[in-house]
Length: 318
Length: 219
Image (cartoon, rainbow over all chains, first blue to last red):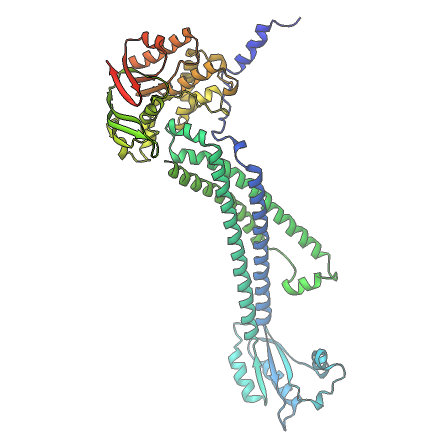
């Protein structure tokens, strides 16, 4: 038998006697262009994540180049009339091997020198008929004990036509290039975050315009500007967290995929060139840490920007 | 408590909608503000709840010259004033309960500290079983009662009501008037803007009659 209508109606009233489970937001979420803003923030965070990874990769590769080049110097023996090139090269090798901090010294053979010159002079070059300088590659084991200045002085004094090249010019150029790329990356990052901040400012203003009635009622109830700003900030913090997480997460996923693809791509077109340029395409944990920090920063920036925009607008409304 | 001296107001370069208003509203007083439509009642109420600034004259509210009130001081003053709007101005996305509790919420109070007060007042205005209903499904009279409850909930020192009984039947209008009268007895100064002669005849109170922007006072 069905229950009387009055009993049926009484139930919901009883059920809502103390139903206040969590307060409803004072600013209705549907009045904020949330999806569009989350999308913009995601895209910005994604691009910023990739930029951070790129900057980290360049900076890591530059460090690698610098340390590799810094662990090697070259003794160059130029041909001088009346001197025995082979004897001078042997003298340079012996001198370098005895030098403190040096691991090994190896004079390039005629074949090795010919191979070096092959791209310019072609195969089968007769080195005897050309005034080609000979090279001694010196590998440094202990940079602390090694003094390039002393080696240069001794080579100049003892080896006829001898001089030392520590690749300082190359290292300086590489460092300058790497620093420029890092600065350019940081500049791009700043521009993207600025664009994101502007999007948030516009979204906040639109949200405020759409909630003018709510703001007025809150004012009449005695709400302080910081209270109203806090209500808006709560929404935008959530949107920033969502956007940052989606964008940052996507960047990490793309980098992971790229790293995985390149790890199994040895020999494939493009992969070798990338490896030659940036090494083993390994994004360090530090870069992933920075991307994580970026997500937090994006959320905080979104909340802070919206708060500031609301405070400014409220001041203008007063 | 509230003092107007030679107050005038015009919108832009238009004619004065309020001219030379000079009157006082004392603490614990009860008065009706009446006059024909378009006489400037709502504009005067807006001056009283600090929503407008006069173009000339002096308004002092709670002994503070309104021309010198800083934005920082404004919320504190508004918390001492309860307002019932003619168009209710309830927030449609909040329940009746939450609308009425709004003044407590903006004060940052814990819900447990005011829940019983809000429920009691809702029961008193006959909305006990409508507290979890959203304003769009309330009738005009119910919205009006919710708006009144919101204005009264924090027991303000000064209460302004714009046509507070315009949408309710006579018995409920009488009941709501009693509520205003009780609030007045407890110390709240009350100004009720109304056209309703029947309502005014129920209470022997001061009448502020606004005609063409000018005020006559019948003590």
